Image (cartoon, rainbow, N blue to C red):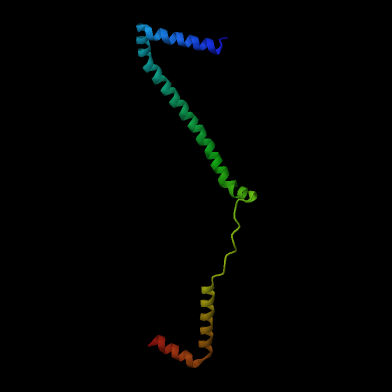
Length: 121
């Protein structure tokens, strides 16, 4: 087994031999493009496989969070309890006024005739 210093020394020796020997340089230049293409092809294939696996995992995680997320957030206390819905004042007052007018018109014949003349003529 080689130590770290020995490996560095061997690498340095190989690099200097490559620089000074023209045949080794030519062979390295000729071999570099196919090796690079092979590395690119293999890397692309491995990356696509890993992305498919990650996509499946994220799909499972997303489905889990959509189904159990609200319950989990409620149990952890992350949801805000808003104020109870307020009763709107204007519709209540308007409804009460319309009801009062209807009662008054129904019980007073004189006002009923005036309203009928107002709307009919």
